[in-house]
Length: 584
Image 1 (cartoon, rainbow, N blue to C red):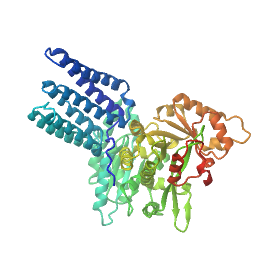
Image 2: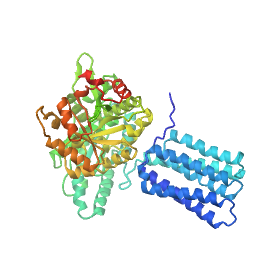
Image 3: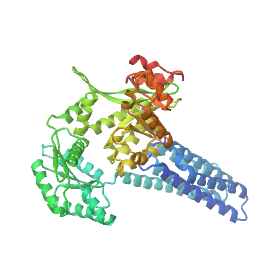
Image 4: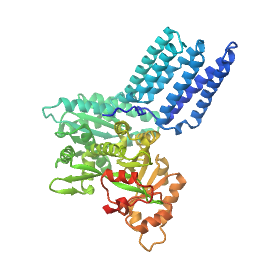
């Protein structure tokens, strides 16, 4: 097993946060060094000190102006550049107090590393910091022994405290507004109950959507909406007794009941009565089935809540997995019946393979392939889609990590809009990249526009954080049903995927494609790349090229296949590549 010291980000890392903190550190260190060098008249090496301090000031200004453009790897390189700068200062000022002053900046570097990189990525930086202190003491005699020993201890304390705070922030499970468990806290409580209740005691999860009540209160001001949520949390927590009440989302509460449908329905009636607010609210419930994980149960409850929302009013929908769909799909995944295949994505102008889209397939022993249109809806309704999505993500990252590194390439992985609302989705993506060693800029997450709530603050925030790591975001099926310029303007996207329905209508004699022309023109205006799906004929590819479509995918260049085919195509000559057409 290889141990990687790559710059894997922590759960709170974003380019903006890293750039701002790095800029503050550089500007502060440069300003202090510059003023000290200028004001101390007896400084023998004033010129060198001024030069180093000026470099730090310039670096701080550059970080303010364009630091957010740096990748995570770039910030990791900046750490060692800073270490080298401090080493130069300490070496040039050996025997002077200024060497000690430079060394005292090392805890700032340690704090930056442990705030924004995971444990494995901090090992090399920690070794560099301790090594520099040892070098300054034993090779240069630049630091007193007491100062060197104190610095080693201080850096250790800073590293431990910063790392603990970052982990605590990632694992916080209390909603600050209501004092109730948040979604992460609910999942933690659910896992505890699932581990403890081994005697078959019924367990039911209910999700209560109070969005309409909050919107009504918000007309009186944001404080009124917060007061409503806080009041509902306190009232329901007192009324629920041993049941766990949590704030599941911005306007959604969750109640975890030890009991079946009857007990849950009775409790919901009491909660509605205790709310003492005008207007009702929809509720979705789901019961725990043998073998369920927390993700499956919450997924089914969300499916029931979605149905209750469509019904409207104060309806309550209970999800019944009478066919055992979730258990069947879980067993199939465990048995290795699911596989991931890769459809090539081709540069429209040059015809060479530039990457692939990961697609899941289910092959049942003795029955053959199950069409995705048959099992994906069942996976979504049963809540299994989250488990499947994350397995596909990890599998695709592992496969793409083996593709050639000397050429630009990418793997595209589908993610549901509901998945983006999950509190741990960002961590899951970061972990998949870290475990596989795949660089973030080689992963594209594809979100279907119609399933993404463009008004969801949680979904938009996680997309922005993922983009800050270098991951690209593609909007799938653009132009079908839910499209609007206002939605597109709010979505943090890099790529528009042109739906196959617009490609399929392009006939051999067509000389114009106005919809394609409009989409590609819009994408260019917004600075987005375009990828056309479902390209099966040469004349379709020709029209797409004419209108400036950047990339294409479809059976013209091959059906989905093994990842090794993509790797071989990428490793081949960088000329028009038709290696995969034999799979048509």
